[in-house]
Amino acid sequence: MIGLGLVGQLTVQLLAAAGCRIFGIDIDKNALELARKSGAHEAALRSESVHRLIDSFTGGRGADNIIITASTSSNDPIKLAGEIARDRARVVVVGAVKMDIPREHYYMKELELCLSRSYGPGRYDATYEERGIDYPIGYVRWTEKRNMEEFLRLVSERRLNLELLTTHRFKVEDASTAYNLILGKKSERFCGVLLEYDTDHEIQTRIATKHGAKSPAGAKLNGKIGVGFIGAGNFATASLLPHLRALDTVALMGLANSTGVSGKNTAERFRFGFCSTDAKDVIENPETHSVFIATRHNLHGPLVCDALRAGRAVFVEKPLCLNENELKQIVSLYRASNTLLLTGFNRRFSPLAEQIKQSMGRKTTPYSIIYRVNAGFIPKDNWVQDSLQGGGRIIGEVCHFIDLMQYFTNAEPVRIFAESIATGSEKEVDEDTVAITLKFSDGSIGTIHYIAVGDKSFPKEHIEIFGSGMVAVLDDFKLATITRDGSTTKFGKGVQEKGHREEVRSFIAALQNGGESPIPFRSIVATTLATFRAIDSLKTGLPQTIDVETVFAEN
Image (cartoon, rainbow, N blue to C red; front, side):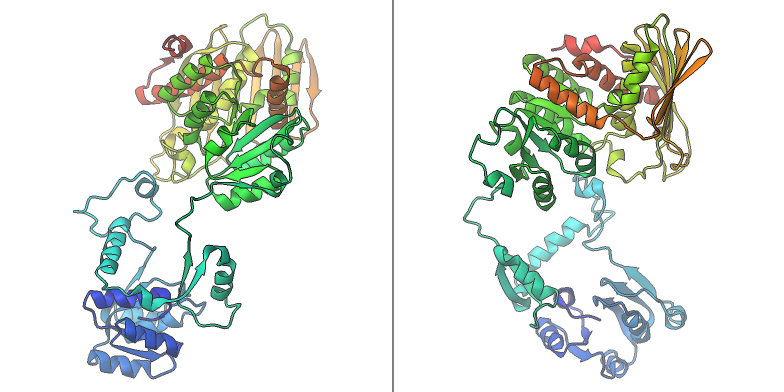
């Protein structure tokens, strides 16, 4: 054992429980004493004649296995491990050390070098850790869960002595003192440091911010629309919350986020009255008139349903939901409610998109729309690609472009056909580069070329609309042109505006004035259903009918 900190001491105890003979090495003589109590047969300072002592301990053969649990920017532990190892021994690196591998001993002894990625098989595997899909024991004996189970069994049998390693205990309220100790801000020896929670008191999920604490109940509304917000990720803080905060007709009531620290910081920053780790605190707050949902995609459908049941108006970032069952449930709840629901299809609210539609004038023919999206690569292990958590990029983003086509045509999609490339690469998702053809109820057609295999530095979105004797072009929501009768009119100043501010303002204005949703609910349902049918088309290789009536008829 090289390195006898807390992890090293625990490793010594585990090895002792397994019947191993253990030699510990560290730079701290106090750690050596603790290692002997933990079960090490011998221990030595690094400054001692370690090579000679190891020879004596192993009968001149060298160590069978060397586990490095040290933490240092030096490669000395790696170098030392190679020197004291026997021929064809194994070196296991657990700690964070410099991985500068000296060739001489590792090559001549043909050593096996292993790196431990903590906990065991299953770690960092979302399928295992988040979905709970286990590895068959016949193939993987020691998984993350089985390792934990065995550790707890050894603790319960008192074959591991954690009390021996516990040098300090702090109440959780004094956590900063504990971290100051660990960070070396206090000149005091430590090994195991415990934070103790008061288990007799109920955990508080809701905390008042400094803004909410100053206002008596109800005083902060003053006729304003009470808004609750769920999700405090990058998109929410960059594209939605700044526009909400800028509205003097809105009172930001509560913000819920799965991570407490991030949620509290965001709530303080945008002047919410309280923060919570439980979405129910936001939805069920009687002062909340409308709920904004900007979580990961798998939570959209369930949270929309919860908010509708509570009678709240809903702004949900795209997509509306991830499957048809959720969609039907949302339709049923919405029709039974007397409120608004808007999905964040922001492109139709872009000032340039609105200018183009106004300038196109009266539609005298169906349109042909070509929409190219240079989407860029997203790796397979990203949450967006997870079918259960993100739903994939067709459901998660192509919905934007289907909605914008509806906006320009004033017609619903009625048929869809999709076909993707086949890269044969394990790193790429074939469906991320897809050609989608849509037929609309007015006879218009549209094609979406969604591309993930290009250069991401190239502009993302380019739209061309042909019909009624004109051609409209929208270039990445920065510039636009309308060509009619041989004359071209240009719009835009070269600054990208995708409509986030305008959609938020439109939604709040509809709530204030008692108006209709800025996007008709039926249109939102049609867009969502179209993405599901696009995936069906990819699976079957056949065009699919988009029949919105079937969704409404069942409710």
